[in-house]
Length: 350
Image (cartoon, rainbow, N blue to C red):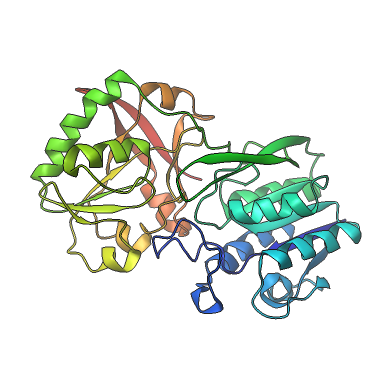
């Protein structure tokens, strides 16, 4: 079987920097995040005898060789790979007969793949800042499991999935659909509807009082978190992590470096990604393993009962990039759904 394997080596580099994507970042921004996640996904193809069609160097060749494959390079970038290189590589893979294209990146990379080969089935390995599209596995490990089943087990059905992306203003847009592997380990698309649950509005004052009493508090991204930030300070970012001290805004849209410079013991408040159930690993990569090791756990979690009931599986997902940490974070937590109301939900590794 001939598979395309394409890595965006800069994917995810913008997350720790509090950017909403990684477009336009130079080579010095590369962190190895995408490469490490790509290597995990490749484990699912070990011993299958597949032929990998890939891009030169960091676009896939280096990782494929390190994993023991003898890849066919169908496109070689002139320098640091760009979106145009992703498109050219996908087109070359399709022309060379790829039956499935595995790409490593985020929603921006998914858009490039859609533009280049809309009719070839794909599997996205999540490595970007935001992964709202339903073309991704829930984690690199889940991608490896899907690939292992697809190559060695019974045939997996092919279904259509949305490619969606959020612009700088926070608006989610549908860019089209592609064919993907149908498997429970594939994530759902980000739900775009606003959560205006009346009971949830009643929970905001309760959490506001807790944050105001805390010497230090980190509040994550999302519409519900933005409502809390507005209640506290009348401002704050909807797409980033803000730091509050005694209820006052201390750092808006903090980077990972700024969070690591804070004293340990901060309160952590998080929302839930609607339609997907992600708690960590989608749009809040500033909260990396080193930051999480220094905050209070479990966090205060706020989400409406309707949002929780609509999740594709009854669990909150974490994908921090550290599989051992994801396993340690698993367990049951309270989710505040209204004034003096809560539901117990399980945290699972994605």
